[in-house]
Image (cartoon, rainbow, N blue to C red):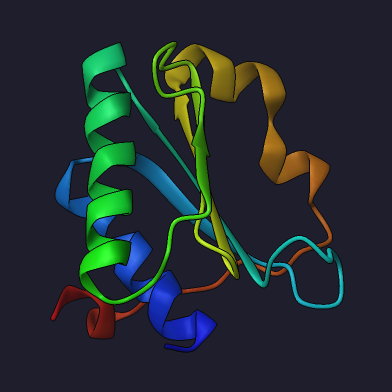
Length: 118
């Protein structure tokens, strides 16, 4: 599976669990870590965990290995490393504090149209 397909799966998985303010950044040429970052947040610890769990399950259902998941128990900032796509699932307060979108402000935002809502 290519990284664009995995990005779409991750975006839909986060959306299915009602993640808020989902942003996908194109990190190609900017970071060696991944092709894309997905950044979103939930409003409670349980929602943050549900989003992270859904990301992991959907990636694995589609044949992609999740290399690691960090921060799940604390549910403040969960990192889901799916290889070429890395998802950052924040609790609302932590997202406001870390402001990853600003840190990676030179990365273009990936726009999703109705293709993601299949």
